[in-house]
Amino acid sequence: MSRPEVPARYEALMVKVVDETATPAEREELATWLADKPELRRELEEHRALRAVTDGWVARLEAELARERAAEGGGAAGFAERTGVALLVLGVLVLGGWGVLSAWRDPEVPVPVDVGLTALVLGLLLVLGTLAARRLRAPDPYEKLRR
Image (tube, rainbow, N blue to C red; front, side):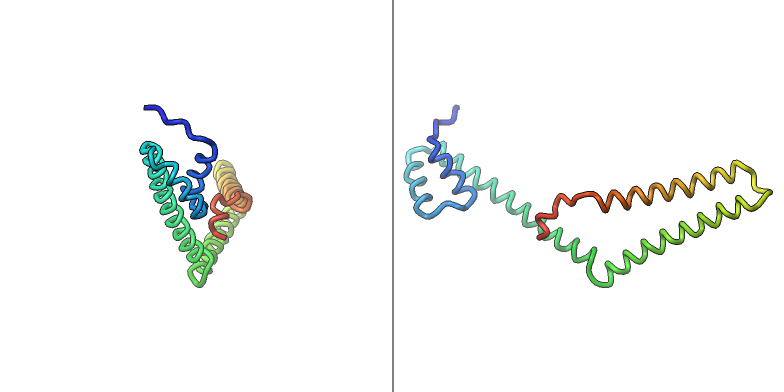
């Protein structure tokens, strides 16, 4: 079954009603026009139902983002998390650097072990640096919702 032709004025009014931006006079005008068009009334109600579902998704997403933001940056939990990550990175760097220096200075350590430890520490530094840079550069797709 094909959709009946809808004049541009009433298409615009249907969109405004779905978006909840129509004035009472516009809603009344559309209701009067739709009085004898059951297919279009059904279509309008389907769009309004879909809008209600997506509004629910947005509300849940906003609530989740607010909870994450409070957990990430706020209070003792955020401080503890950032401090823990910093201490972990520092420990890996100190122990890795010490291992490489010890291996280089010890003439009894075989060359493959020296090369392997050096590659391991350099790879770890590269990965940590890349992850940090990516996190600092990456735009947050949900930033608009957080405001």
